[in-house]
Image (cartoon, one colour):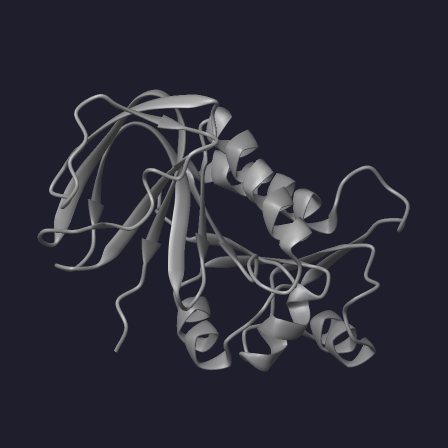
Length: 218
């Protein structure tokens, strides 16, 4: 199978300069409703637009139709959010291509309730075996369980936040080491660790951990 980058673009904050570059790396782009406005600003028309279409501008919707992208319209009163619907389509595409990663852009900023809902979706997909990689100009984050090598730069900050009631974690290559250390959901002990070099290892023996890499400035 050919590796492809599948991405979902939500309707959160969007940095145009950063977004232009991020979308160049995407092979299949699904926009959740108003996320299509962001894609149009970055001159990358989506392959699929999905949602109740109450946030997409008429101009962008018309451009999407002319570009030949698929459009799936749902009623406003529905159980799923537009982003949930978009992720379902991304999951279907990922399954066909044997991909475990789904990139998620435009999922931070603006409304904190939406962001917290997005973290819940990240956990849901992690439990199904998919990694939702949320990225914005300042952060990259995903949920891990098991052993994983992560990459950064010396001095770059990384946080480990338990989203289970308790997580048991070991690390290598970080300034504050953990050897089967316990991270609790109601205590932020894992905030603001630091890379020693360009890579580190995080192993989550028990529980689920949200890993947040703070992008190096400059």
